[in-house]
Length: 251
Image (tube, rainbow, N blue to C red; front, side):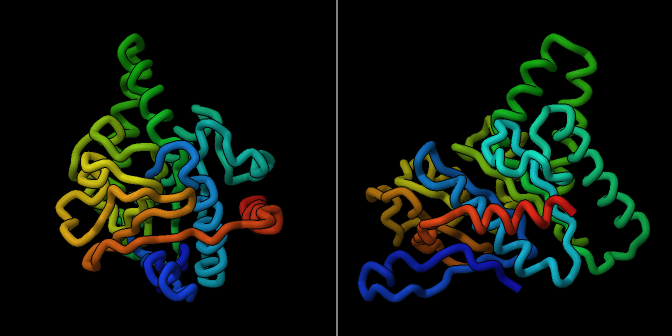
């Protein structure tokens, strides 16, 4: 199965035809883009489509948002914005993953952990770890859990989505973590450095990744496929979409 996230930009500009672009449900997803490029709209759309596509089969979805940018979800049971709550939810998600690994039974539920403002969250932990022993232990544990989930989680249905401004070395403990994202979405105009970091080990010779991109436009790469230009649908009225996501996370 695949989740629709937008349309082919190049085809739309040439013909005005909205040919859908989608990503596989089984891959970890990395979304990057500086302020104003449309990351939040992309995230809302991805949450909506994930629930729509996967909930009929059983979906365990939780959203961690360190800067509380998706504040319309504040009352939801599976929305976490405080530092302590996010740490606790990552631990829970990881513990369930370990239980499935030990049991040897994958089950039928799709497990999804979404972390918005990933860099801010990890940076806060790293800073505190330098002055506090307990904080250091927390930082090391969470970093290790996320690395393990990225390396092994998708084999048993545990998938992570991370949203960052830049997919640089400061955001991940190793380049191997970046490589484990089978779906990579980069919004906005890309510098040579940012493009090479996001689409590490991908042939970019035929992609004009430095051309000017308006908000909501960018690039998407699915492992085993080619990099494609993406346009995210403009949400004239986002409220119904937010209500749909909120209703699911309240359960």
